[in-house]
Amino acid sequence: MVQGDTDKDRQSLVDKGSLGAEPSEHYLERVQALDNVIRECMHVSQSYAGIRSPSGRHYYASVLFTALITRSVSLANLVPHTPWASKLIEHWDYASVAGITRTILELRLAFFYLCAEPCSDEEWDCRWNIFNLHDCTSRRRMFESLPSGADQLPGFDAQAEELRDRLRNNTFFQSLPPKKQKSLLHGQTAYIMPLEDIGERVGVEKETFRWLYVLLSSHVHGLPMSFYRISSGEEERGRGLPSETEEGYTSLCLSFVVSLIVGARDELHNFFSNLIPERPEQSNLHSAPPAEASPSTSKFYVGETRTIFDNGDTRLEATRDSDTSMSIIVFASETPVLRRRESEDEEASLEWFDPFYWSVTIDELPATEKLFTKLKSTPHAFRVDIETRTLLFKTK
Image (tube, rainbow, N blue to C red):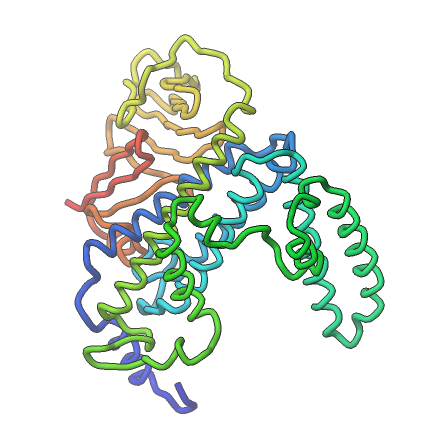
């Protein structure tokens, strides 16, 4: 846009952003899958909050899992037709999606390499100190490039030499070939093995990994491969507008990211699930949650609160507000995630819900700001599915 653009020009941009057919069902399924997994992983992370890490593996598992979910949320905010962001137009940019996807891939590899893969304590210390040395030398280069950073360099040099001494005294490091030792002591390499080998261990075949890594990396830098094929018409790509190419590459990235963070989620459970103190059994424990709990308003005193469902992970509490109404709060790991109100005189109403916990659909489509705005002025019904952590809205 140049100076002097009018409202008509801006409307033209909006119209262009709306060109093309609606995204395919396959693409919307990928968006919803990412949305569901992110919400679940955020809840998983919160459920393990406050636990003292018994080892370095546990500490870095929590750090790297947090980084994975943070990048995934950024991805969810970026992609078109996402429930995470309200947009003037649906902006298609698979190149930026590819860049974030590569970062998520590398974090996933670090999670497995440093935390999940079984190895001896000596090997883990070796891996960790190689990471430390790489971090130290990277920070030194950053300060070295600053005119005012020279006074920081001696401290980094001393730290780097201390880390090299740790590695030289490590029995696993000593077992590596001398040429490999020399290379690692430079601090330019963070891993003992190639990334494709780690990728294979997390379930990505080497040929597939190599192809994906080249594809994703080509869009991180503004080199020829990232812009040579920008085009319009039937080959539309790279201009922010919808096309089969944009949708195809974006779908590929979304599917790949889902598989990566699901793997990390499962490994995180292996780390922390046995560290959660067991909750005492309660007399009203149910074997499985109902799809939607809705207690009768009888036998409750006004102002009284009762637990009407508790399976150890999810709890529902009902409070009698008046002779004809009550409020129901859903708790997940002691955190309130939804509040609804039921009345004999009016239809049930949803007063509040945690958007990070629930997956939301409207007329069986992933919820967007546009659909929510329309929903407010349209008669509708809703259902709370506790098992799948889904809120389902349907217009009448």
